[in-house]
Image (tube, rainbow, N blue to C red; front, side, top):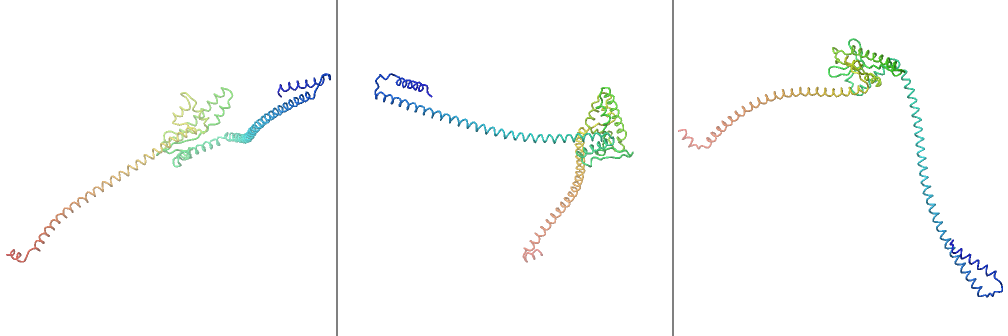
Length: 352
């Protein structure tokens, strides 16, 4: 409400009170009262109109504010609803992930039990040997064609090597050695002294396997190359072997005995090189076949050339005789024509 209107109302109320309380001895007239009433009525009407306008303005502003607030609440409610939907979706995904993690944890637990069982199985030397042979067979079968390798190859002595890879007219022996028992002693050692002792026993065991492979399977008289491969199926065991350095290292000793130490990864690289060599060998063999075929074609061409030249000579001689015969025929034809064209008198004259 406007302050001026309030002040005016206060003045008006004071005036009314004054008129009512002033002494009766003052003269009052109906005209004065009428004027006062008219002024009061005008003031009331003006005040009422002003109040109505301001109330209408206030109502409009309040309605506008309510609409704005309602719109903002509606927008925020929609955003909150979207966020709640997204949150519900995220929660659902989290539940799924948690379920998947639970399943994965169970699978890991099962795998752990299987690994534990496998470790128990691998304690038996025979089981380790079978696993190593299976790993070698699988790797060879994945890379080389069947005709280029043979499993459990027997020598004349009766010894059997796990596999041989055929390269040309010779082959490379490959024997799998797990060497796991002595390696586990290294990893299970608690002191540096125990670890060093276990490592010495491990390297001694590896050298023993190298000697056996070199003595049993490198047999050039039976078609082998002058080297062989020792396949170590476990990468960690293989790295322990090749990490030994120095002049007396196992790796150097293996090379001196013409034994190449390989693991699944390094054997894969060797086999890839062998595949390239076999392709080159095939190309060489095909080139030799092509050369033989070309030589035969050259001989056939030379024979045909001789026969063709002989035929050409015969044709040339026949052509010469044909031309001679043709000339004689032309002469005979000319004489015959001249005889036919002569009259009887001319013939008598020629006879005289």
